[in-house]
Length: 209
Image (cartoon, rainbow, N blue to C red; front, side, top):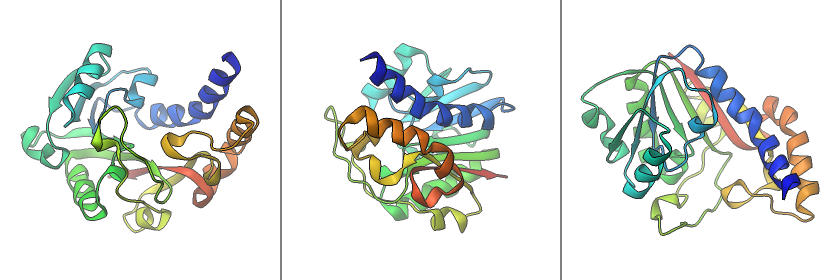
């Protein structure tokens, strides 16, 4: 179990490091679709953070962990109204847009850009990866896939994370056995896919404003 946890964490450290690096000079952050266990919980916080999510149990779980400084329960498409036009240095959506139909995803990205003063950060699978609901939360289902070309046309910087695309399935879990071997392969391939995002399992993208 210790080896498994070590490999899982090793695969995620580059991702958490990138989030911390991109947010290092931000004073306010909006976490759109924050869920119950936002990746922001894995980095040292030096900014004021607001989490928004429509799923009340997820908000309750996040609040219990004190991940954000403030919470708003509501539909992410209403963030401009829910926040009364308030703007943030950075607006992030980590593992969110793939849960929306593509056209609605575009609409949300436009709203996020208007609310951000300095940058927008996104994490999403590279292409469509099937994912079913978990714990009765229908919002966990994947409804769209996003590509490198999608983000290029919007002016995002694009990085690949979590290793080679074909090694992981639902919830970014390793698909093949022996698990520890392929998990190690995924971790080792992190450096390669960082510079070749088309081959990565997930895309971490940043738009500077």
